[in-house]
Amino acid sequence: MIEQGRYSEAQLLAALRSSARDVFYEYTLVDRQNKTIEKLDIIDGKITFDSSFPVMRTFTGTVHRVKGINLYSVDYRLVPWLCLNIGNDTVKWPLGKFLINPSENNMDGYKTYSIAGYDLGKIADMYYEDSRYFVETGTICTTNISELVSELYDYTDITPNILARNYANEWPIGSNRLDIINQMSEGIGYNPLWFNEVGCAMVKEYINPDIRPIDIVYSANEQSIITDGITRSTGMFEVPNKFVRWIENTDAPYVVSTYVNDSPSSPYSTVSRGRVIVDAESIDDGVADAEHIDDYVRQIAVERTMAAEYLTFTSLNMPGHNFKNCLLIDIPQYSIHGKYIEFAWEMDLSTNGLMMHRCNKVVEI
Image 1: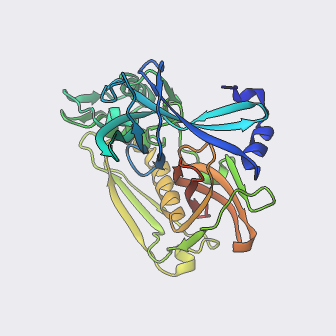
Image 2 (image 1 turned 180 degrees about the vertical axis):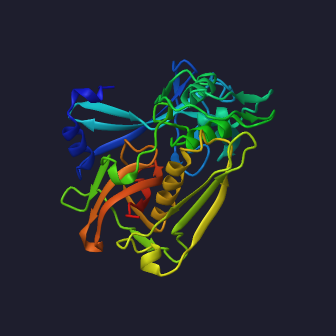
Image 3 (image 1 turned 60 degrees about the vertical axis):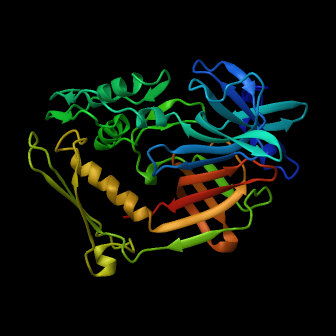
């Protein structure tokens, strides 16, 4: 394998977007310490990433039996690679790290295994507290989150801050660890727990899409890798323009926060529509303090409003996609141009397989 750093980003992008690009896929079985056990022969791999699911990245595929390897070992993980031949070299990108759940079957007299794979979020998703989890007043929120995540994972990337809880909180015995982490994260304006392409646990601050930098560009130009199959839809009929949330916790002050989209330039606003559509829900125990609830409600308003404009398109398979990448999409023939947040994607790793992108347009509110 040649390290990606041997080539510039421009060189790699040009090779990936070339009509003569030479791409193939490899699958490595590794242990918990990331030590390679064996390469697997998988014939129909597929990766799906959906940011709305607790366990966001999943894998399916069929593998031929490997002699001397027990695929039922709970210690093994599967790492798919996108491999690019460039010159006399081969450059590789990991596409995720998956816990595997194999099932044995027979195909034309040969023993094979159907593989269902889950990113490492499955570990927290399967973990239930055997004692109550209590958070004291004044505790730094990201310290709690870091402790909960680091207990289960060796590799973490959690952005710290100084926000402290101004009331105590408790989760009872039997609470799901992933639910606790996500409630606490979202309650301080962070994204939920997700795992990147190398299996590192990520907890990062939510950034308003309006000010996010562009991660990836898809443009229908001479180097376009966009294929046929573009679908654009707008579902503005039931988009709320007033958002109400309140804290229900006996140890916290009763607080109600309201955000109203009254911008004349927004097609969804109370001004443009001439009526009010209310989205009202109570907030769970994850919110850190009463003062922070306003930011939380605005975040909800942005995400719910963005969901009204939906774009699906296909392209050649590309590395670098993770949790809610910010895309710049330019397809003039369909009058599509602007910033989009990719909330889900699928990658077919078979020969000539394509990538499906599902995005929401960044809109003003």
